[in-house]
Length: 220
Image (cartoon, one colour):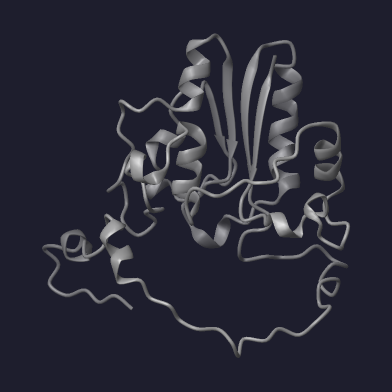
């Protein structure tokens, strides 16, 4: 049996037809839901990609894995404990060929546990520059589909990471006006601060350590 784990970054469940959205936005996902299993109560373990992905591949909440943030601005400061196994490692140990076609962009702060256990790891962006990471699904598939055909008769675990809904969101031609069904209203928004939450952010107050030795640095 082959195992394929597909993650679509920033995709909202409430904008999928199979979860009741009034537009037909997700015909392929809807078909998978009809022919497979649809989880009606699923909750994100973290608010950002890093903690969320870490929970997916470890089965642990961030409070247990100690991985709370995506450390784009704190390169390589927070890594998962090497003693905590990740999904690809477990399946590799059970004889699976393991492969990932990833769209996680920032190599300087790329957490190493995301690549542990993979025999094949392809980062389609191949750059740490934010402006150059806009890889759409079609471009990822151009690398992905040949690999699947080549390894079709092997027992494999395949992780696929799509980025299309993530900011900056560049809609395909013809879809730019489809979702303008009503004007937004921000008048009732309130800023709610929970001071206790800062106790659970490992990087809070670490900027002085990162820039230690520099004569002058400013952070906007």
